[in-house]
Length: 258
Image 1 (tube, rainbow, N blue to C red):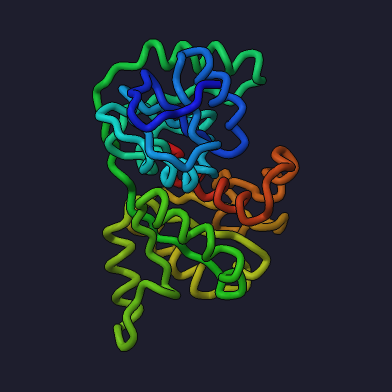
Image 2 (cartoon, rainbow, N blue to C red):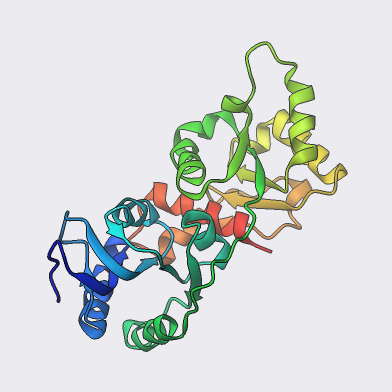
């Protein structure tokens, strides 16, 4: 792998999610560039290539501040284009399927060699998030990630309504303005009158409804027709995720669905 010196300008610099670092190192060797995860020094490069599978985007965002460049390419590995664009704006972006390493390597190389320098922009949806108060300790860290790392406007009654406001009026106003209604389903939600009220209003307004299941409980009867994202199943399919990351993965999947 090439190492950085302060004055040289590299053809390519690479930053990646922690679990994609080995891929970044191999790409740096392939293209005669530099991989940044082992260096804290600011480097100069003709192009910055950022590799992310979505959940490590906070690391990538921090690392890219150490690269002086006028051209950047974000490659989403197994994530929708919208997520890449929201997390890493002002960059050209492409997506590639999440595949075994033997297949991923040529796919990523081809993406780098074929990418243009045009900058794309995809509008971020505004999200009305409905949940049970009992689940707030689980869901607020992932909600903060949606806001801080992906720039999404997420309305949550618990922290989005000013004290003294007429909360029912606020809920209706935000529901009318939102692009997506997202319910965090759990055992507690089936007992929540307020969640039922919000779902009913969202349906009445014709809003797209998305649902993420925190546990294996069945959704309320009025939502059994909605295909949901299951956090327990994500943990089974991706055992390297911790519960917080699995919830974030589920939220990202839900809000980026067409």
